[in-house]
Image (cartoon, rainbow over all chains, first blue to last red; front, side, top):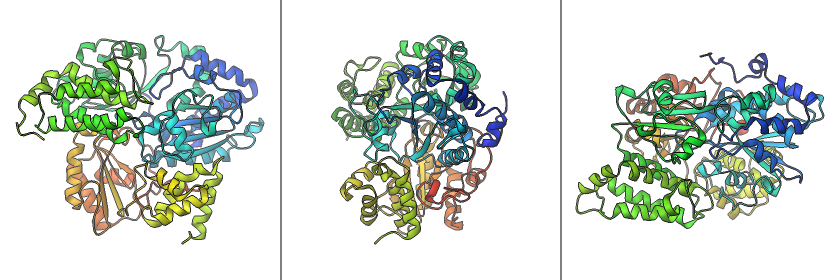
Length: 420
Length: 204
């Protein structure tokens, strides 16, 4: 593996390794439409969680002006830390992607929305933005092309839900970060009710390569439906946690045992979360299935944010599910009753099971509450809520009930009779 | 009471960065928090003046986000991650150790105003779990023992600038990834050090 240059975050290093050459060339030789066509041909699927094709999303952008591009750097999905590395180590790659995308989309003001807890990544990005202004890659007349682009770095303040694109737009407008009903979609009515594209950090970081090498070259990498390389964050009980940029299509066994170095302390694998805390869990039964977006969907889960959380045989899966439910209960924005009330109840019921006060009826009660949030408990999930946070908090519970129900039952059987 | 001139200048700069002044409410809330060491009614009135909102509208926004602290906060906010990856690798034990060492229960601020302690949701350091932030500056791969030493160092040395690199070297372990070159400066207070909010060695 090639070592990452220590100063990769600086403009000097980025330029020395070919950075901004693509922008320089594209502004002269390519029309905005040609750039859009290349991105569409690349079949680049969004790296934020939903996996929606970026080129198709761009195609929905309404003609009204001004239009905005918003980079979603609100990475908060438990188990995910890949955007943090892209922000800290390669901010200029993101900025070049932003300028290329803004040119393609007719945007003159772009925003980078970074979560508040990412103080260091935000500093690095801010400094890179200033370097880019000074070097003429941003500002009034970029590289004498006539293109004008302002970039504003915006800091969030500790709300997971702002990673949902319409909540992010509300937050950026200076409002509570509550998701909006869709439609209208942001591409039609987004920031300040104007056409807006919201793309993830990693998605836009792919744009310079795609424009340099062509959409068809990108489309030639990896299996159909999962084109290009992708960053995965490996964590939990894996021997070598970290971020890994890979071509998709390898098996989960290869992902966990070769890339991740297997399970710590020579333990046995119990289960893993394939795509951030919102994703239903996988067990060793699917170890030889390929790591692709479509296969993960077929198997009842998703690659989501790319956060793979590995749990070994020593894991108390009910306590693990409680940790995730607690997260969503804390982060529910409170707009929709099934999510706001359901999350709290699910947390309390799981809490009493974990602390040895579970009741016999609790399993039925948990599933009933889950069914009120995500009717039918199926995949892809139905929802009674404005945004997918509701179904997300159902995932850990259906996962333990599907795969480890006997452990939950045993915990309840051994409960103290005088429960709370 | 109104803000001093240099703060006014920063506030005006924040408003100018956005097409609509209302968008500046979030950075202005950080500024107000930094001025008053916690969010006060007076601070929110100032924010309202710059954004054309009413103080109640500002408060409605502030109350939504967990990093805007209504009560006064300590010199050091110690945030211990307890989300799934940190949970699996001992984050709960780290939180317990921090609470014990500082004498401040999670979610509270000590009476001497030195520490605020909190268990927090995922801070994007899962590959270096368990992880802690001090004034939003990160240290990865801590243990209950090293986090106790970290708290003792904060109490004894009372550092003015909190640097991730220094904490990582002295109290950290495994990292999510190679951080690259050391950063100048760090946090100078319990709000995220960023841009005009007081980062050493950085233009704004």
